[in-house]
Image (cartoon, rainbow, N blue to C red; front, side, top):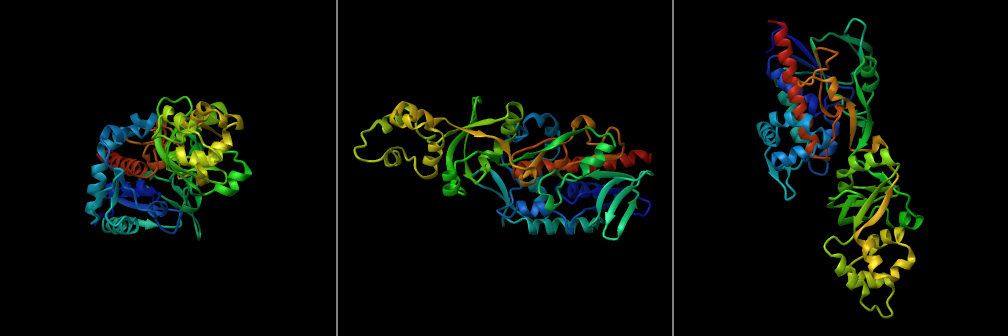
Length: 411
């Protein structure tokens, strides 16, 4: 039980970052009240687990840390304090075993998010965390109290410290609507504009491709941003507006950056990554007799269906009669990506509270006693366990720092 005279921490946001901050802070002896605008906690967490909850990854630490790109320097200290193995140990503490899949992704043994979330919320309640749902934070009142909109009007809440874990700007219907940007900006907090991450992109398809192949997966292809030395093998889905899927999401930061700088991003596809250019030339140059070029490509090179349609979108008709040219197109087919899809369609978002506005313990330099965690900070990572691990790790840092801050005030 917590003593009534204990310091009070308000955690705003029932996402994994907020829940972890509440767990760490309540474990350190603080009275913790958690507020969320939604009727229940962890809604985006539950959605992420619909196809199997990817908790973290079994990469080496260096590989894991590299997934945070230009924000590695800022995120790596979080991971050193709360890494992938810590995530698995935390899950075990909730009675949930995990396993490593063939891709190195780590999942709960039953693949489900809901049982894990239920156990987590139960433990938080047992630690004394009090939950206040359907309470939307609108910032601060003039007297420094927190200002909330509720179903019964507004209320003011006094807290000794605050952890903000309000999510990014994607999936507004699940609570991540970015509304906090306005009231943090009004307090002078330095913010990077929110932008879609782990998102799809627009491509100006022909009507034929859009009508015939939207929804078709394209598996085991090479992808790279034109001009980059290295690429990756992956898969994506052709949609009515362009491209979606895991391989596209993994490149979304680079693609978005190219569009911002140049107005367009050129994505090069290798439609036959298991074949050399020389082998493709020989296969295409093989006599085809009375067969159509489409039948010839399908039988000799395996280029058919949606791959053949993608080829037709780009390759000038005369080049189909030139094996060297056609093989070159197959190995490096350029698709022009015009824009990322809207942020509310994205799995996550980039931008948010700049690290320059925070101290190493994630406290806002200009708002002492106010800490930030999770996706509302200016970092991004590939979807799945990388996002979740860093969100939880940042929540752990913020919760511990809030407890330390309040202890130091009382000395």
